[in-house]
Image 1 (cartoon, each protein chain N blue to C red):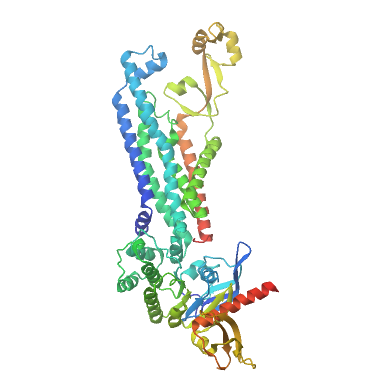
Image 2 (tube, one colour):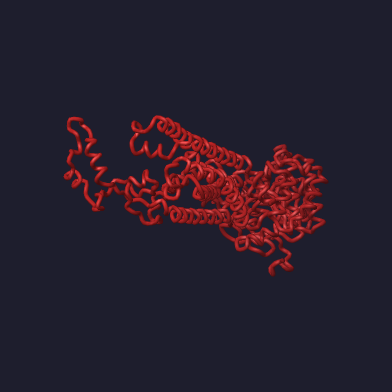
Length: 299
Length: 333
């Protein structure tokens, strides 16, 4: 039964002033404010050690915040982890299947651990992907293991899915297959998904919202469509005096050429600029985040 | 059933190892029991040998007692040595990986994201693991219980109950469960199997020391019993203390000191020429006096066993509870 806080709520995941510090001095998250709307597929993008996994694990109750709050459909996992977890499905970054158990055993295990687990739907999904249910998990490829994790997460019928870089170790074909299953399930079941990833090209097709995380801070938060419409890339000196084309950051292209990411106000453009790709947008914000840290440390 | 089947499948190597060791010990105990019974030493042979010494016993008696003694010392001794370590090794082998391996291999991430109550997850495994361990340990414990009377056929089992009492019967099961609980907690805290096994082994040794040190606080009051009865006359007891402070009584039941005995003796205690104890003194001493020491009579084993089992159960329950607290608070990796 949904709690009172969750009835009518359109925020699936929330972080309010969230900070997380390890070993008293390593900051993983610094004052993150974030809301993930129900029914959205949000990409959480950032480099290694950006705090993506920490953020996801805080919603799961695997990590305790140093400061601030988190909510899952209005429920604070610190106060009621059972209720929060009952609404979450999780796909971890590293496959964590039992090597000696078969895929069918995993479905039985999930049914034993999670009331209401839809084993038939999970089995059907895996059969469609030609993953034999009698295979030992240890004998499956990385892509197949990720698919088993996804099938387990979807089988929970959870309203919110947290996917922690499930694409990182997959080949392009396996990535595409994984995202296809995910999107199909999200559309048919209306669940909310938060997908952290390094692979920006793939999430462009799968996600409707982009959150860029760097050095423990939220650097960008907006819809993918808006992000693509609002950003342009051009030479360093292309920004306009009226500040309708504000410079976000200058970064080096693959060929060593310097380019600047601009945020355009009201669709403003300038000579020599072109629409930015999602990868360039992410790159620009990551560079801006790093520069801000360098400036702060210098000050 | 599903949980038990999957738990066994993921822990089958240690489960089979403990099962094999338990089966081996049980079979060995039964085999040695039949070997001891098969020697067929007359009870009088033992009495004759103990009271008169080997030189006075008949040749037939001496030969059969010697065969019996060899089987008893070599084979039965090894079985009992195995029974001393099996509960601890078995308990640790089953207990440590239940949580430790889940964390080490990161499978706890999957389990704890699926099961909303980690305590329920832990308790289910602890119950399955504990019941399985107790069942497996019960078999060699029962076999060792049968072996013990066969090792001392000249004694009355009802009153000689303390001989190897912790190496046979229900207490071995409770000791195994305590080791299991130590392993469970060590695995939950450390999150790695090998270090947790080492720490758990240290914990098990400490447990034995604590049990030995605390025994006198929960045991029934000791009584001064004649050593001759406790040792050989169909009665024994759990000796309290080191036996360094014996009491001596004369045939009338009066307590006398050693100095008084030496003063009354018609023979010197030591033979100066022989440079050793004077055998005439000790023959006279045995005819006139009785040495008493503090013992808990064998009949009271039931009370001792119940109290020790209760203590070990409480200890195990506390450790499982602590494991539940650790599991509910720690990261699954």
